[in-house]
Structures are given as structure tokens and as C-alpha cells.
Length: 117
Image (cartoon, rainbow, N blue to C red; front, side, top):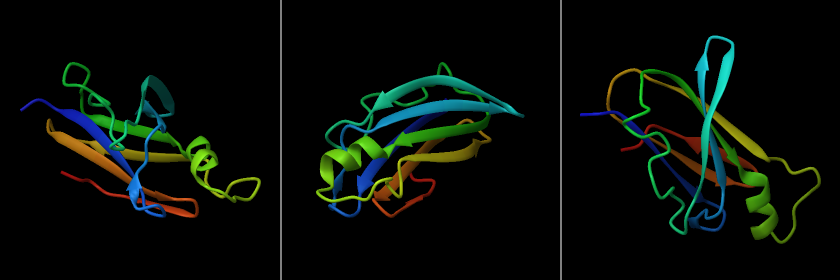
């Protein structure tokens, strides 16, 4: 099996997939944080392609950065300024060649993540 990374964002306040969220991917090497690329979630709250494909995959520490603020601006009728959540970073490790799925369950006042399948 070759390794790859996918993600998925669900808006738990609305009970719907979170479409239109920009997600950046970084590789972390010690103190160095290297930008790899970004994707945008589709109508199902997923990216159209893996956020890290098999050709780029290698073991190590990575960070997904979910830009939730613009999404909340578009979908929340009333929100405070500044927002409670704007940018949500999730740092995690991938140790073996496998499918890693890192979903984000998101609301204007909280989030959770886990290693999915």
C-alpha cells in the first residue's frame, strides 16, 4: 500500500458538510515548517483529490491549517468580532505507509479531530 492523506470537514452546528473551506498543508521538520499546497473543500466537505498523494507521501510530522473564518462569515448570521475560531491548525504524525484520514468536526465555538478511516 502507498501512503496518502485525505480530510473532510463537517459543520456540526449546521449538521452539514462544510463546503468552501481552504485547507493548507505543511510538512514539519524540527523547527522548519514547509508549505506543500492548499485545497478547498467541495460540496461534500472533502477535497476533490487527496490532500497529500502517494507520490509526495513520506513519514513525518504534518500540519493541516483549516481557514474556517471565511466559512463562518458566509454561514453564520450573527458572530462576534473577532471570531472565536478563525484558523484551525491540526498537527499530526504519519509513521507508516497507509491511508491517513484526518476529519475536522467544526462549529463556531469548538472543533475536534481524530484519525478516521
